[in-house]
Length: 200
Image (tube, rainbow, N blue to C red; front, side, top):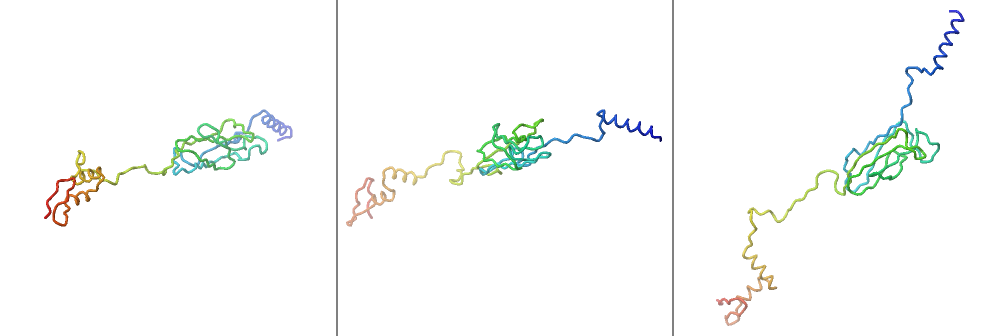
């Protein structure tokens, strides 16, 4: 190959490179990603515990707000609860105390100046917070009195009726019985409000 041919080949390669044609394997850098590791979507957070959100980011550096220039590869996570701003996070864990009930939590990656990335990078999770246990269904059982076997009302016994009528009079049942059958020293019945029984 002569020197002139070599120069022409080099010029041709330079023209192709300068014309904007790029090598077939060159790719743009991947953008930031955000995913929530825990809790799982629709998780139940029990015993009134705060909700701990663990998230992961790629191609993004978590930094303090206003800590340096705003670039699309660094910043912090803005945390929204039920549509309203709650706080910012510069670590991969956010702990938020929430009242009982369902809640929607959304994280958004923002630059150091608070501007959203373009395209927007967000992740969401729904949780249910309860003061009770996180597992199992609540239940209720009546231990006493035991269930009656008949389908109708429970009949009252005669002694129960007497006790309750005695109680209404303000005199205990035992006192009224003794007064009705008491005898004096001569063997006569002492009068009472009930029909006297003869002493034996």
